[in-house]
Figure 1: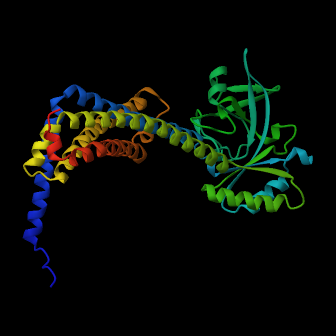
Figure 2: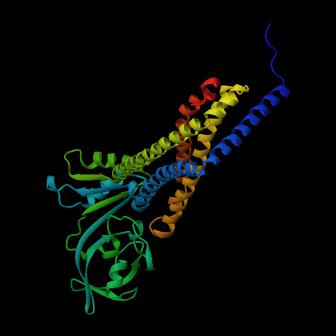
Figure 3: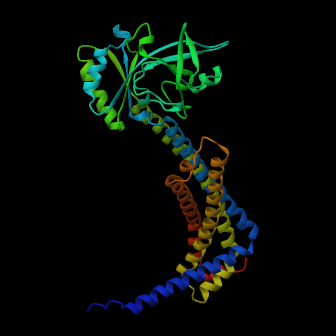
Length: 395
């Protein structure tokens, strides 16, 4: 005959008993740890240092990775098409640009002519890169003035050049004997940019002696679309030989991200070693505690306390050390992360305060508690399996 299933009242009573037993174990564990506060504090400090090391190294690696990703900006959705000098191709023609435009329907195609020259304003002069971009608004933004829809006249000056020459919108600059009126000053670049606009001047394509293009930038909406665009360009221009070289920046961004991910894992592993060392100190504390309380444990076993109760009490002691040390280490690590945001200008708040950072803090605490419990297993097993007669024997 099957035993009747426990009713709700019985289940509630069982839950209450388990809770009461756990509360009693926590009280006994806290009382035991308080007997030798210095030893308990040193063991807890070891966990604090270990958790702090794991969380902080993980967060630092994450901050570096995310900051680098932010600095790379939208490079992952760009493809750079350049003439293949090894194949005897030095420039890209209008026909090449037309083929690229037909190959990529939804992407933005930006052909560029590049050069360099001295830029003068009165007695001041500076060397600047020269670019010709028909639609400068596709790549740049203006700090002052307005970028023309199509650049046909005047000069667009980078922020460093404008500062060096002391020019602003409406002034004129001289380049290779020709005078240009400044129609706009570019905003300062705040990330990685292939063209380095701060030290450049944009002039009309017609001002170049050779108007053929030196490269073409293709901007897509995502990295996957950029990869598809690169394949289409290869099919369109390289069917009869490698006329152009195609650089997919998404691959470079992915490699950089993989490198920082590996570095981050290595840093976390280093922190984990320090936490394992802290676990050894907890093992030592628990063994000493069990040895000192051998008579007390023998009395408890003699009056009917079960092995599971002794085991639970010792494990709770180790767990308390892990919880207190873990929370303390995570709190200090969190303060260090906020300090990075305050002290380092390149570190933004979204880079510091995100789910990845919280994940490292939670992982470090859980790992600290796990190491503490694992360190308390042998002392708990040893205490629970002592025979009462042997435990009470006076040595």
